[in-house]
Structure formats: C-alpha cells, structure tokens
Image 1 (cartoon, each protein chain N blue to C red):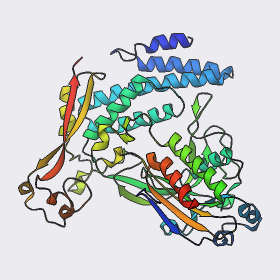
Image 2 (cartoon, one colour):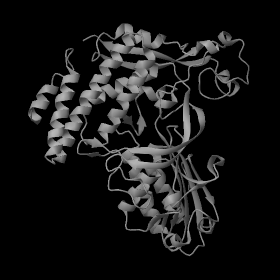
Image 3 (cartoon, helix red, strand yellow):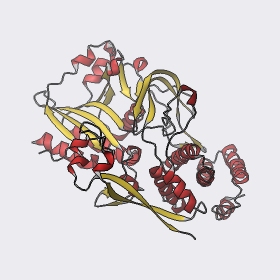
Image 4 (tube, rainbow over the protein chains, first blue to last red):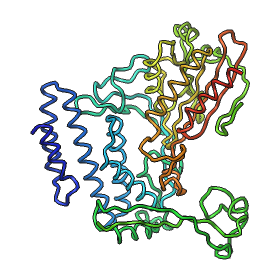
Length: 268
Length: 188
C-alpha cells in the first residue's frame, strides 16, 4: 500500500459502509513499516491520514449516539473528536475541507446542548515526562521534542508523573468538557440525567445521515416579564448573561432575551 | 494612550531582589538572572499553596522563547523546585514576566504574540472585520467563546528609573494589537 493507494481508499471516507477499523489497521501497519525504515516524514504523513479517518469515524459515532438518545456519550465523543482535530491542525498547514465541515458541525451540536456548568480540577503538576524520549521535563534542560508535534508517527505529549490535586472548581468554560455536572435531587439518583435535550432531539429528527448538510442560526427572541413573576431584581437574569436581572433584561421592555435556534438543512 | 479595555497599565516599583533572595532561587543562579533581559516570574503563594508555581504550559512557552531570540531568557526558580499549576479552566494563563529595556520588550511582545497566534487563536473560524461570525459565538455558551488569555508584563528600563506594569486579560485575537499598544505606551 503506497500513499496513492491510501488517498484512493480515503475517497470513500464519507460513504455509509466505510470500514474504519480495517483501514486504521492497514494504516498502522504502513506506519510501522516506515518507522522500521527510519522514514520519519512518511510515518508522519500516515499519522495524518490516521487522524482524518479517526475524526470521521468519531463524527459518525456522534451521529449514531444522538440517534440512540445517548446524549452525554455523544457529547464526550464530540470532545474526543475536537481534540484529534486540534492535534491534526497543529501538524499540518493546509486546510482539509471534510475536517473543517466536521469541526463546524461539532460546534453547532455543542451549541444545542443544555450543559452550562462543569467540574474542573485544580492540580499541581510536580513532575512531567516527555512521551517520546521518556525524559523528565527539567525547565532548563528540556529535551528536543516539542509538545503537540509528531515524531515518527507519534504525538509528543507531556505525561504527568507526579501530581497533587488541590480541589475542584465549578466553571463554565472547562478544559475537560466531559466533566459535566449532573445535579440530582436524591442521593439515590446519582446516575440521573435531568437535563432538557429538546434542542438536540429536534436536530435528531431532522438529521437523516451524518454528512447531511445542516447549519445553525441563532435568533434573539423575548419572553414576557410576566412569565417570570417570581423573579426578583437581585436574581441572576434568566438570559444567562451573568448579570443581575435589574441590571439586565428588566430594563428591556421587550422582555427577557433568549436564544431561539433555527436549524437550516438540505436533505441531500 | 491605552485604547484597549482589557489592558491595565500602572506605574510600579518592581524589585527582582524579592525573587533572588527567596528560598526558591539558589545563589548560583543569581548572576544569570540579573544579566537576563527576559525573566519568567513565579506566582508566589498562589491559591495559598505556600510554594512558587508557574501556570501549566510555562515550560513550553519558556522553551519557545529561548529558541526565538538571542536575548538572555531565564526563569526565577531552581530546576528542582519548578512546578506547574493546572487550573483546567479553558482560559490561557501565561503568568508574570519581567522585561528589561526597550529592545527586549520589542522582542518579547513579538514572541508572545506569535506564540498565541500560532497555538491559541483558532484561525479556521470565519471572521468579518476581525470579529468571529461563527453562530456558536453568539450563543451564551462560555465553552464556545473565543479563547481568553492572561499575562502580566513588568517592564523596567536598564538603569532602573522607569518601571511599568501591563496586565492583560482578554481575547487571544486582540493580543497582537495590544502588544503594539504596550510598546507605544512604554515609549511615551
């Protein structure tokens, strides 16, 4: 299998019966061959193809999970795909249309989710090692490897070998999107998911195949103040601006602002 | 004149002696630190930790900085005391720096701006007049907002008469413009 064979194989990447597992196995074999021949740039190129396949595989999995109403699992898969996309783009200079499409769709999907609060750990990283050469990261004597770059088909990451966790913070913009808070009323309800997924369910009804084109438009709409009769001035504004009601939508005669999501789609 | 609402500028008296005389900088580093024009400074007693810390990712930026210039770059910490704190909120914290002189300031602002543009600004998102047009930005989801960066640059002239502090907390996309402002303000 040479690079032309790989590119021909990837032409059918967006087709329903694409065999991701088999293709990834073949790519891995090819990469190992290049590594054994000390052909670094060729091994790195195969790594790029691998990531493209994984991104598409993950995107189709997101679609399947949403269709199966496994919304939190789909959310986690979306984060995994995001991470691979960022990793890929750290190592290539040209744009890949298929990947840009997937990245855009993932942002649209995340916009529709009801999650707003996440648990974020705070920790001291006392010791870190380079995943390529296993050398401890010493501030004045660092190894030659750059975190995020690819060496012989492997990404350099810093492995934390000694850590002290200080605590947990509740944040709205986490590094780890999987750390969603799931509030429940009873202790026995520890696995309850009480979020309202109506917006995602609506998408699911329209979205008939993974690569079907759809896009998101957000419109400002307003709800009457009378719909929030129990709201006091000192409460946080329901529009989620982060401001108090009296400093925010209470001033607006139109009412309380909310996002109205419009899904634009082409069923081709 | 400061036109950026995310940039705070103040006159300051900054002394490197507070760091050199501390228990996290040994005497054999003193000469190197005093002769450097770009210095990485630890956060002291951050989160009441009782130890000097650097933000997660400092080692990457330090490495990048050293490779990007012939100016002397150093860090106010003994090797074996170097530790990073990970806050795991998606904002990018670069920490505090001391820059000595106009030339080093010009070089450092360029390096930091370049690093942020290359590694943090998502150039794939569409923009119009510099503002993102991606609909997800219009939503109130903080985790989809453009990345925020934080840093503090203390600048002193080489004879120690003039000293200013520049603190920035704002969009990564505005950093390049802010760096130009910093250089202008320092020159005033």
